[in-house]
Length: 231
Ligand SMILES: [Zn+2]
Image 1 (cartoon, rainbow, N blue to C red):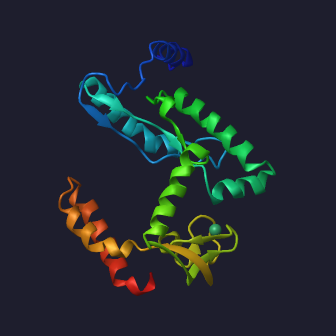
Image 2: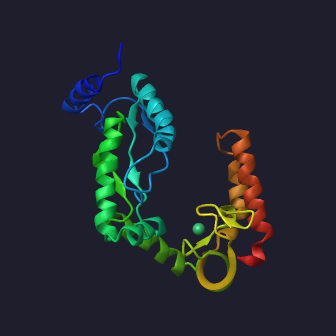
Image 3: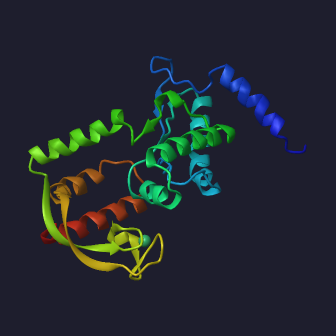
């Protein structure tokens, strides 16, 4: 059978009409929560790589639904930060206009791919009803002495105008744009996550994760513990 957009359209309209992806917390069936990393609406559209990421978890959410679980499968957009700002500079469009427009386009694209999302639970990190909580968490960490400001050397990409994590520097170059990364001293905020290194290491044993994933976590936590003096 030849692939036809009409088939997609017919079934998607039916699913929409029947509210198939509506999540009801009180519905019967054991609750099952699945979520993937949100998209960054810093580009105008999604690309195939997005569905490469979302497709498997969408299939998994459907499988769980068919097995009788009450599936909660939300989607959102990680809309703050430098990529959105860079996009605004490049296009000359205000970041609020471009970000919200990109989100609308991406939601439409995800629907066209047949994603099983309930948009009522969509989270957009640039909206006040979301970022009031990130601000709240920061305030709590600050009050507890777990957030502090200090001058420290950073990896700086002069093209992206941003600080890069060590993991984002590949052979001395910015992983995003390939510009040679400079070392620069900047005043920055830190979280004292090293205070929790032992607890994190211990509790990894209680998690039902693949051994290879646990090993990555152990290596990473040991590394930050070793570099404690730098934090
Ligand atoms: Zn860069």
